[in-house]
Length: 122
Image: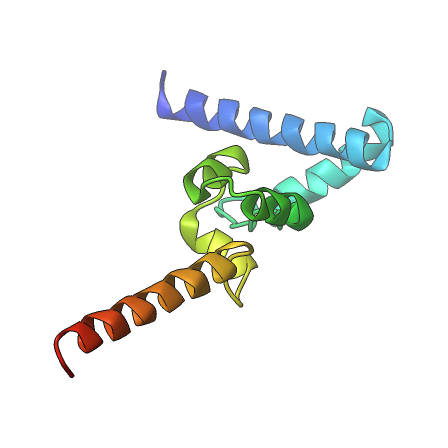
C-alpha cells in the first residue's frame, strides 16, 4: 500500500472509531455525531495526541479474600491480571494473609535462634 493510501485508511479508521464511540457512549445518531467527529479530526490534524488509558478498577475485596484463603500470590496475579508491583501498590500495608504468616515465621526464627544460642552453652 502507498503511504497516501495508508494515511487515508488510518484517517478513515479513526473517524469511524470516534463515531462509534459517540454513538455508544452518548447515544446520538451518526448524523448528529458527524459535525463533532469533523471538529475533532480538524483539531488534531497532523498530530499524534496521547490519550492516557482509562483508570482500571480492581476488585480489592476479592483479591484480599483469595490471599486470606491462602491462594498463592502467583495464582492471584494470574487470576486478576496483575503485576506483582501493582498488587503491593494496592495493599501498601502488606499483603492480606501474609502478615500473620510472616510474623509467625519470624517468631519461629527467633525461637530457633534462642534454642541454638542456649544449646551452645551461652
